[in-house]
Image (spheres, one colour):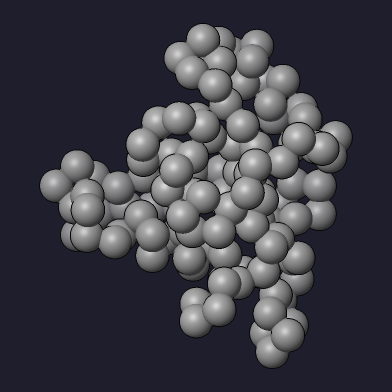
Length: 115
């Protein structure tokens, strides 16, 4: 059965993780991490020749299963946003997402060693 999914797109010439979701009863088993790693595998390493230099995303900074998880997986908070990523953040603000908590943009360049 399907227990999760990831959606990705291209934003400002980089891979962008739009969404990752895992059903509750499959949580804590590494499914979300595996999905994120699949999206990040889309980025190049010296041997892969893939198309995109990095993956970006937007998320809640302080929700335990959001910002801290992405940081553990090698994503870092960024403030300088390209025009398309800035437009995504502006849409999030206009939609009221920031009312629920601080939202940030993050980037992970390439693959982590061993991934």
